[in-house]
Image (tube, rainbow, N blue to C red; front, top):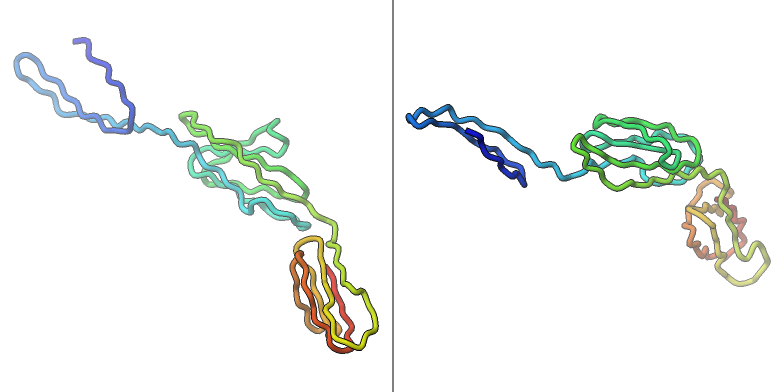
Length: 178
């Protein structure tokens, strides 16, 4: 006999057997076919951040293989589902993608690590002055957070980059930094 071809379009277990004209049957056999249409999903922890301290990025992927590049994709390096760690100590754009054994490949993901060595710029308005009535000093910061104290630096309070208004009702020395 010449057999037959079957088109398989989804995952399944095929059961089959044979028999002859005399009524003899073989044992039932099985074959499992898995149709994998999903690309691996690579991730990096932490995600995109700005920092001024070296750290380790942990790369993971949910099925083999993950691929990473830090030179714009000129060279790619594979890593398995057990993951890998990358030491980060400067500004770098990390590219990640996943490709499995049956050639499912996902899109390239970008993770940006920015090395920030510039201190924030902070300000207070008015900067100083003499008055006989209460007022609000406006504190500003150009990024992340600013910090202020009115007790000589014994305690500090934070304020966001959006700024804050600090009520002043008596003689006060305002300290602030970013």
